[in-house]
Length: 168
Image 1: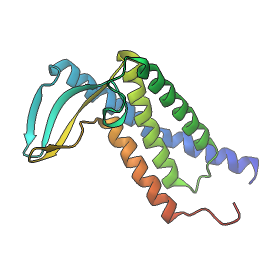
Image 2 (image 1 turned 90 degrees about the vertical axis):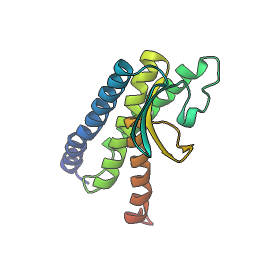
Image 3 (image 1 turned 30 degrees about the vertical axis):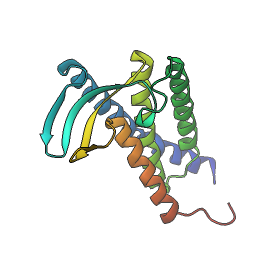
Image 4 (image 1 turned 120 degrees about the vertical axis):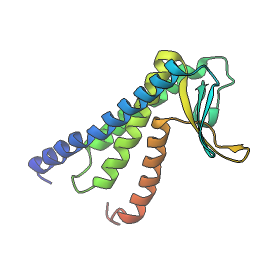
């Protein structure tokens, strides 16, 4: 690959970072709305299977580590920051033809940054999306979590659609 091709691929990657920015902005705006308009643990039924429900997650996914003494705030902040840096580095190494992988990583990056902002500013992540069936509720989540989950699904799809060549 020539230096010109690498630069062209890099320009494409930076253009795709708009997805990351959109995820971060939507995530932060929705969290700000919930924090300003809901009391903690307030629930608003939207449909028979979806609520807005304001909770503060002091842990990681599914409230893992939320019962700890506070050390998890900086640990999870550091992990999110390192993952974000790793993703940015990975993005700079991709070729312009790897568009699905680029989209995948920009979604995950946007989600990681969105939750990193909460954790660094407040010590917890604001969650508010509550899907449920009957009495069974999926753990509350937010736009950042949704972007990370979509990115993870797309990453799995990408591994099947665009498998790495044997000689790479």
